[in-house]
Amino acid sequence: MPPENTPPRPSVVVFDMGGVLIDYDPRHLYRKLIPEGAEMEEFLATVTTREWHMRQDYDGDPATATRELQARHPGKEALISAYYDRFDEMLDHAFPAMAALVGRLGDAGVPLYLLSNAPGFLDAWLRGPAQAKHPFVGRFRDFIVSGNVGCWKPDAAIYRLACETGGFSPQDAVFIDDVMANVEGARATGMGGIHHRSAEETVAGLRALGFPA
Image (tube, rainbow, N blue to C red; front, side, top):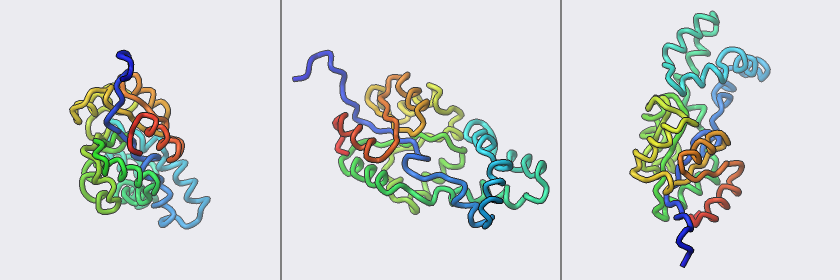
């Protein structure tokens, strides 16, 4: 038997989405809209910037943000509108090895949850259209999307909310994210954490914790 002071192994896995399970990238959409590569890169760097989009992951409203950005960039209204109108096209490509990992864990009965910093409308997408596009998404028992719940990684509140949503304690779960600050945020609340750098490393990390990965 293990020593009495050996901490219990986690039994729940909580995944980040973009960069871990799905290759979120605006280029998947804008290559279709701006065929010239340098022009596309300039648009993404100066108009629909990462900083502009990240505000919608928090408490921003995509419709309001779109109108405000269109007002600042006359002549680019249609391109700006496409960002959120066709957001799902930025999420067309899952990482096959990670989708397979989710499938193995699901087959083994491991409770799976998804925790993402993303605009609120992604909650409805995950619960419906995403499962047709990426069947492995249907393996998750629930989804916590920052823009939908009003808190975000790496703040402690969103990790606590994930635990409350699933009915498990922080010590019962391991969180996987490609951003180290988000992993550290989870660890600070008592969850385990795996910094995702490759599917192989993440699988090894889960196996070391006793998961059937």
